[in-house]
Image (cartoon, rainbow over the protein chains, first blue to last red):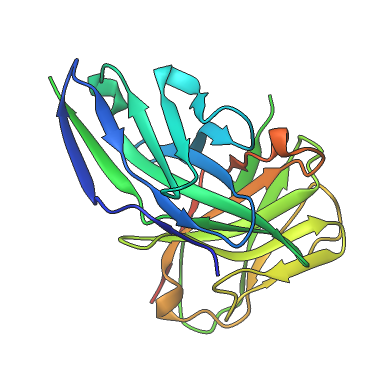
Length: 115
Length: 115
């Protein structure tokens, strides 16, 4: 069965420093991997995805993520954090099965960026 | 404007009183899905639909029903709500044509309290 793990409930980083939010996954086939962000009292917004191809994918707001097949990881990164990046981040994997698409989300990681 | 709408946004009800949360999208997406968000558990998929009249269970379907009679609408029905269904609910939609368009678009959420 597919699964997603976000090992950190919370990540704290100072503004201007690089940030990493970790995600590992388990799927039976080739994964479709996603990162979403949730700002307070808002719905989820898509940040970036890995479908195939380059292991480093770039997304919205300066975020990028590195797909590592051997480590089954898809960590979210940003070279220089902003206070406005403070939010709840979800990693998700989508897998095609006989019924269609199931999507599994991680538990989420809350990012705090301090000025 | 491309969007997913949900109604109502907030709902307080009593145990056993049937309710429906509506979801509508204007992007002509084939795929629609319902999730519930609970602290520490992330988002869990309730039901999803690959197209009109095609629905399938997610990971937590017990106590919920859905229908997909029109492409744009995907209502979530709680026929006999119980307190353990108190949660934040999100509807989402996406294309199914190409993996490059598999990211989901989320509604603003419905906060349901069952007393």
